[in-house]
Length: 447
Image (cartoon, rainbow, N blue to C red):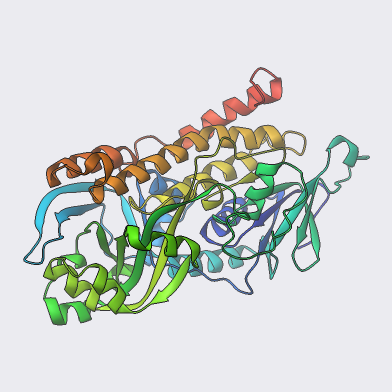
């Protein structure tokens, strides 16, 4: 795509859900050009199910995506129910409580990615460059690089293949192992010597924290489960701390089985973040659980074990004309299924701000700070709620002596504000715009 000197050039590193959604959300703005730089050689998404609640669904609706997404997730209801069971008894589980929630979407990640790719290709408003893993970037002073109104290279991106590219604003959507975040945290220093990977180096990915838990992920075909367990509750309700819920309109059941085993923690932390595993490994970990859990695991298809990492809450997301979004900014463990929704809220706010009249080459640092100031506190709160939910669901630390009913009450307190989606995403946009106007006018702090 040719880039006019008058257009704002947005570079997105990472073509996952966040990167593709941001690109799509920016396509209505004719004064913005979008380039996506993706390390892989094609569009791909690992993982299985994705749950979106409350405000995330509201943001999708305003982006014009809710109806289309519901078409690939038929059977997703306006109201859904989590059933909380104490299931670690071979003779049978015990119902501890329920959470009845509203406005949700249950999606298969690959379907979601494919839909975003199709919609984006129809717009012909963004260019994707594959095989481009970001190594570093250099940001230059705007005043020194604008002569006679001509657009110069405010930001120069460097990739591991030796190539480079220019942009006016850089958005790191490159996940928990974000190279953009790594340099953002260090300032405009040179990249670390190993920045071009060792894929599991903790030095390369500053801020990451191993939770001590792994998640076994798999998809289950309902017909297989029905054959051995009848009308299993996994077809209609969610269960913790093995979690199951229908995705892709009931075509699959998404299964996530969490395990916190102190005897294996060092091995898990040092090993690859994602590995394929045999069904027997999951059955061994859940050998003392109720028959309903055993039946579900025995019907699991291809399975993988994911080391659950998150980020320590960050103190800032933006410097100059560079910012981060999604897992690059607030990677969280999936214990309350809210990571996807936070990505969507990021996208909605940032796209609306970049597309507004407030966004010019000179005001971009203020625009990105406005985005950060609105989104960062909420996302950081979700990280901390997610950590506490893990302790509650596994009866750890302060919940060690709790009853099932106590845990159910705690989960309601931790998740209701988030899942019910109180508040309007447009309120966040308006709040950010007020902050941006203050930043531009010099009446707000710059730190």
